[in-house]
Length: 118
Picture 1 (cartoon, rainbow, N blue to C red):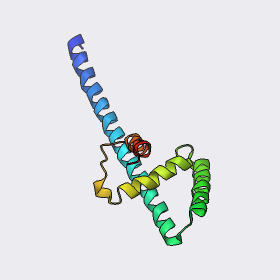
Picture 2: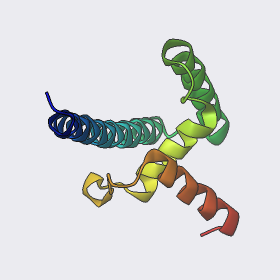
Picture 3: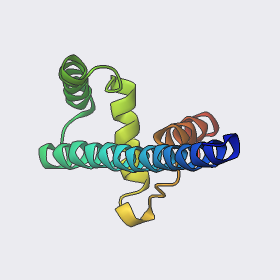
């Protein structure tokens, strides 16, 4: 095989791998945002059903965080669970959520909102 032919072959395979990687990242991000929104929805609905007081609600978040972290690893600390709740409260309709933004983007938006008290 001539060097030119090999380079063409390599470039095609490389482009396919890169496209697949981009697509995988996009799908993973979509699922992550959907999962975190859904977790926020479940927590908010549970709080409404129980009409929990602040102290009790804090304990629920703490216990939930501990158990999820033990089973699934980091990413479920109390602050992140509170961010998931806020995510659902700010975007209670799933269709209003942009899956083009990552969870990191949404977390930064929440942090900015807290700092500037929007």
